[in-house]
Image 1 (cartoon, each protein chain N blue to C red):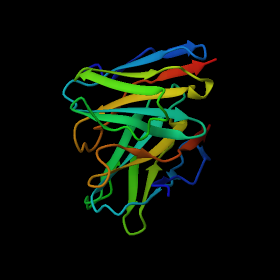
Image 2: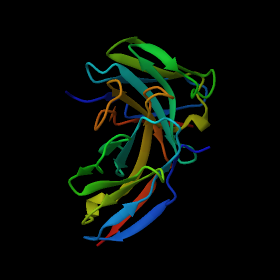
Image 3: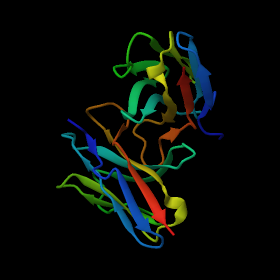
Length: 115
Length: 116
């Protein structure tokens, strides 16, 4: 398996523009997570899905953020409009339920810079 | 309240020596899992070791071992025989099996620097 695949690896955009981050989870994993990493706040969970259904989106910072999982092999995180404070590394991860050792696999992340 | 606390923002260790990275956690859930991840400068998150709350023995994976003290709610990572390639950020994380779904909650991380 190729692991969790995120695209793009880097994104630079201007304030006010729409940004879409993409994630392909590991085949067979029924959980998908979106995390954001910043120096100030560390790694924080934004939203997660179980069997393509959003379970907890309490970590989504505001209405400018939205996430979808139209099928088991694809998810998007959209920011519209983007702001400089959204600059961060966004990780997607997938897992099986109640995974033990090595069960959570992270993608390589998308480094977003909003100027 | 912080669920995962890593009190050492940065640490130095001499190459070939052992080092302990601290992690304390807070949960009322009797069933939980504790994870350690390594994040090198390239940015990816690499799984290192896992300890379940009901596991009787401390977990070990090669040069990594987890010093699990359940009563003290600590899950310290021990790296033996440090190598230059161990220089990275290290994150402790917890999954609460009954209270909080299937997600991981992370600590703030410890930056380890191995000196030659």
